[in-house]
Amino acid sequence: MDLILARRKAKLSREKAAVGLGISFSTLVRWEKGISRMPADILPKLKEAYSLSESEIIELCEDCPKFTRKRNRKPHALQEQTAY
Image (cartoon, rainbow, N blue to C red; front, side, top):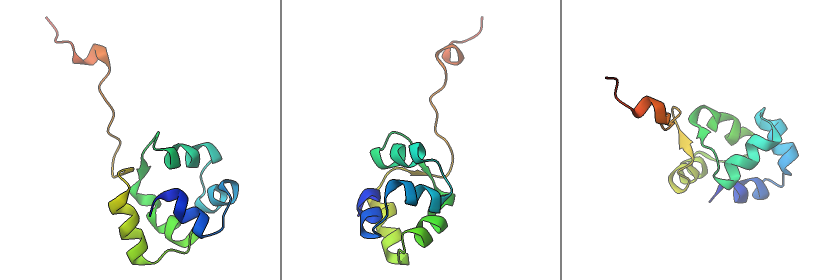
């Protein structure tokens, strides 16, 4: 199950889902499209807003590589250069 399917199963629009999760509409869209990663601390809210069971949350986490515990940002190009 992916995030969009879970939202649709809960019969929520993106607007209502975003409000239920306490996030902006654009953040939800980025998560659903895989543009940005969803933090793991959103899972309890996601479970409640989408009325998901524990097994559905586990399935969602296994199927969706968009969850992260911390931000994994690439270093800036200038940071990769060594100092002389």
